[in-house]
Length: 249
Image (tube, rainbow, N blue to C red; front, side, top):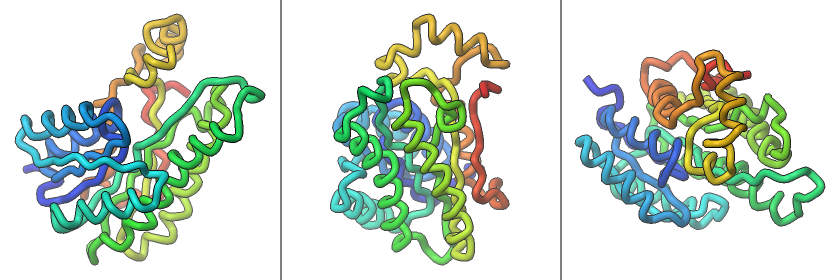
């Protein structure tokens, strides 16, 4: 039997990479998925098609999670289309590799607004939609937050904030039966990692060599952890920061 039958999930930043794999994984277990994207409509459509081809239900909705009106609209759309909300996955994020002194105030706010404020507003507004049985909030952090990765000072700050917020909200929202957990992926083979030059280069070889399981991660590896956290099988997990990195530390 599917683990998430009759559940409704919102996945932000689900047009590609980890977000797309999460949407597909949740859909394969019976959840109806609202696939959020900011600019890549074609990618979001591919995610919906993959969910539908596997027998699931999904629809796309454009929205910039750093803008409160977009956040309100996409959550309202989930409620109006599917009738409820059970699972929220805060995956949308942006990053840039630069030495600290090269970061501008504008870039700092761009990352903070999407990665931290976006998750904050999604959770804040979603509280009005979770029913009496509660639900599951899964924030996507990063191993970079504990690894102190060079040239990612702003991104590391944002993901550290996500993990801290996860811990606090687990305590605050537990009485409402809303479980809050975070998944910290390690090196993962995504479009963004290729664009940043991490994959297919010497950096990838170094990451593989440092990973006990001997490979980089795939989006589906992360999706399986998220599906577990969204399910009743993880009903006793709360405020956990789960590192999904193949042993890379």
